[in-house]
Image 1: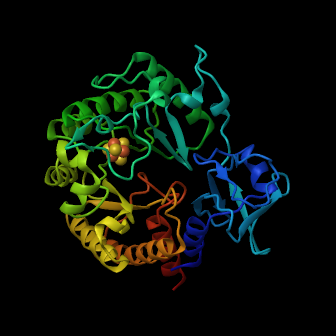
Image 2: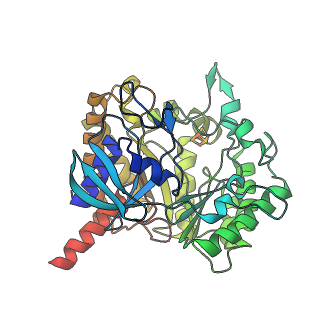
Length: 410
Ligand code: SF4
């Protein structure tokens, strides 16, 4: 693995411990979703049990990395905004880094006084992620007393965090005001930041046609304020053909990404019971294939939660899990579908060193195997969909960039 990708993996796994400089950087950086939690006995200059930290850092060669707070990490940050920040390991090896800045619009308000930070726009580097309907109906459904939500999902619960967006369970349409707010926010954000991708996401509906209708509505609203045609991807669940037709025929999106999350029918049934019950594994893959028939190769994606297979109840060694995932990647690539592997982020006590070692071995084996498959099938991640400036916990773009640099050097 090239040094930049290896460093990215090191930081994703080992995290960064708190320092005064990291705390100061939080004041002008895009905020992390997870606050820093101090360990018992850890040096804590804040006097609080948690602290805000930046979300994303960039190294001088342009590698984007998600910041994970970890009190026992050997990595820390020194410096300041005026003198620049340096990443150090055990007090040595200085590497210049920058943090993804806090954009001005996040502190702004719409004309009617609504905070733009709550309008449903978030940033991953140069990608604007639009989520105006985060509540997922699978959280409200049960079968045989089992929740239909995906087992790893901690973000789709429809609750008071989503009320301000006016999303109502069982109702497809969103309020006009929600669209006014996101359109106004997007106009300002596009004028302020150099966004190169827009990604439409949201919670699922139990009827996939209704979900399609909602995403058509969202895509139309976004298209109306995107006059330069920044590449836009539909990150809904799988959709029926007539909804794909509308999205394609109206030119509403340039790519689609229907997340299968995990390869193999038995694992999909267990890990994504709602997707399995309300859409089904075969229909999901069929919808991705239908999308390839419309948008073509390199425009159809499926995000995978890389490492979820290592949960003990699935009984897989890391080697078996990686080989299964690589088999899945080959199957999808052969159909013209490009999987994207986002590293599973273990939470709540699952950060045992042995678990993390197996997860890392799995991810390295999968990443290398999948890179070889992209070469075999002559598939590249389209840089309108995703690039090194937004792939914050995925390696595909970094590995392909390093390979292209190496090729150039020979
Ligand atoms: S479909 Fe699954 S991953 Fe997506 S929001 Fe619903 S429960 Fe979460």
